[in-house]
Length: 351
Image (tube, rainbow, N blue to C red):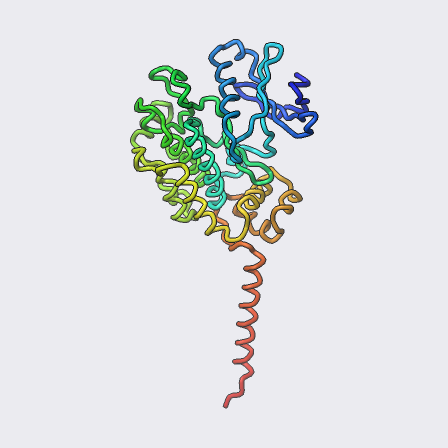
């Protein structure tokens, strides 16, 4: 294992996949945690894969948004290529789904709003992500949402990025117009985010098939089980917002990712009341084993943490009003008034 990349001292391996290995590291001098992504040595010999990796670094460098993983450096050393990025201490949404299934609606809405904001910024920068899916969205232990993996992102200066007729992206998240041979656009990213949010709310993908041909046919037909048929606790105002992302015609989806972000923010605010959205996500991570209770209690009070436990473990709606302490005081006051009224009636003289 490599010990040092540029100014980054490798600490441990934290992930491994088809493209390579990801390490946790410390950037010496600045003393800050970073992630080091190493391209697999077999892929380094592929000009196409090497260019994709370099392009990912260039794309990251052009984007500066709080909901997008920041890049610090691209290093080529000893016939290896490394991308040094911001270290997100948490988990991705795919692992979060595996750990406990569907998420409570307010959590899905908060996450969706942040990813939609990031996509709106990407589209404003004349680029497309083209691979939005749960595995490419990170959730940190401080409640941050981060969009990552811009390896197949496309901008106006990448006209020859893909060959004619070549499909790019993850099959389950491809929009019907892309499958039909049209160029991907911002609406295609909105579609992929809609698939992701549907999965967060129900624990299932809206379109399925035994093979790619059946899957693509299902996507083209555009028929899927309604969210509330699978997740009855999901508020209608959230369900229809996500289902609008899955309109077969791009023009019938949200006009922009920004419009979707604002709509989801409004829905989340109605559910969360005065609790901070990031605090709610910290509680979710704690209940699913991705953060300690001590970390969670630095962001959220104990009563609210306890009240959200069942919903976070089962993926159901959180049937409490936030903040819990304030609600408890109101209930106690109401109970006292009721008790006082009953006592007055009981002891009232008969005349």
